[in-house]
Image 1: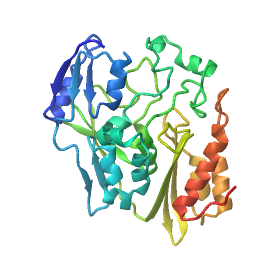
Image 2: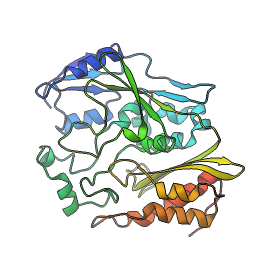
Image 3: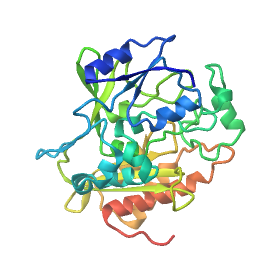
Image 4: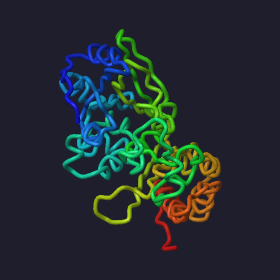
Length: 334
């Protein structure tokens, strides 16, 4: 690890200006909780000339749940805050569950929602010192090598999977993110437009521009009765990286689904909407048979690699169970 300058930013605008001043020769990196940044520094993937500490900025560590139904998360809100918030648990239970199932309690106490969403891929090829160069054929290595935890969708160009569990729930709730630039101007984009497929030659996997900072995540109010559920499937009951995770949000009217949002995580380079499954549920009353049909549609078109075909039936089962959980129904044992 080479030496670098440390700056405690005092405002969002100052931090954004410092980030905008970074160059290819003297890169500037933002640090929130530092969970991923520290790993990337130790692994030599990040070699900043300056590290900008965001934790010294006030006003970004609050959860605001207004009477209008909108929930706003400052970028420095920790995963533990989300997990423990009674308002989040009441209004957005799938998000509370996703935060509670991310990493370990020690990590959740430090990790921020902004940093968690913007972490780099956890792929062992991407993290290997052998693949740090821009010419490294990471996806080719994945396809030829140990790919049992990699993508089963959209994997022709990149087989790495997105590493955030809260991202799955936030996309299902159709969240938005607020970005602030070096001039203090803000713009808001839909959560689904935030992520780009991972690229070893690019230092970010999002549409956030140079000198921009993610400052808030907002979840809009629902105009109908809303039920939701989240499930993370791992190999072990204790902390482990997911095989897949699923978030389901249902807006209902007199027991019928008016709108459905189903998002699949850890199975594609970015969180993936199961659009065909959502269409099957709209205008219906959910039954076991309907949940099975929607789950089957969710895995249609999967293109598993040589060692991860097992993910397809696992994902199908998790989608079915999460749909039924969101609808308040108990799945059968099959």
